[in-house]
Image 1 (tube, rainbow, N blue to C red):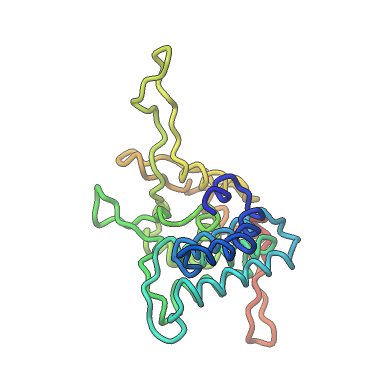
Image 2: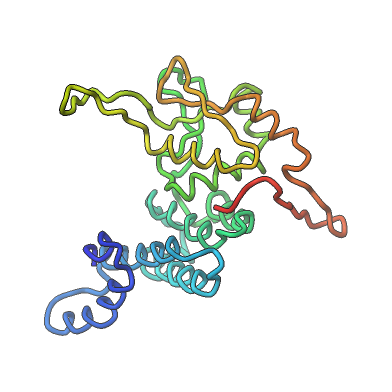
Amino acid sequence: MSGFLKANKIKEMFDFYDNQIPKLALNSNINLKYNLIVALKSVGHLKMMEILDGNEIEQLSFHHQKYLNIFQNELYPDIKFKPATILLKDIDNLIKVYVLLNKKSWMKAVKDVERILFQEPNYIHSLSYWNQNILNKKQTLLGFSYFSTPTTCFMLRYLMTFQRQELKRKFKNGPIKIVCGKSQFSNRARLGGWKEDYESPKKKSIEDELNKWKIKIRLEQDKENPAVWYLNEEDVQLLFESEVNVYYMRILGMELIVIDFFFVDL
């Protein structure tokens, strides 16, 4: 099954699981509840959601529900009834499945992501977007090392839209700093004597996301720690002051609807 995933043959993997694995199980000691098989099956549904277009709502919903069923009934079968420690990759995947479900309207995932990260009493995990600067323990940084690319992009939008006051408080109204790796020349020599130009994948994914925004945010490298990058303060100020960024409308004095004028689709 892992071979099918590596080759990006997701439909073939599900066909093999549905039609061949049961036959093999009859003649061997294959355990269909084996953690690796269950994990591969769940990743298959995530991969399908990544492939699908945001307009294919029915198929996205199908694989979304399949993933949730696996998470709640096979990966963590007791989590509905008692606290369970969730692996970092699994909590990220759980967030990702809601992000991918709402490709066309990222804000619809906000309530579910907040519930997963902050509200579910039985979800014990250590996933956090806050880090400490290793060169200055008193300095707080944003860090997305354990977030996949889709969840990293989502969290950037979430923080810059809904958590502005927390960002201002954490960074003491200074530049918003993110740990996202170095971009530099590698020490590995190549043929001809030249050195490889290396760019951190995390930094690239963050920069690509910021460049998609209608008001683009530039990344600038920290002079003291080359693995830390900060958001250009003028760009951030323009974003925060823009009246067309996020428009708040109260309905019946109770419900808050946020209309997004600012971001393109995930």
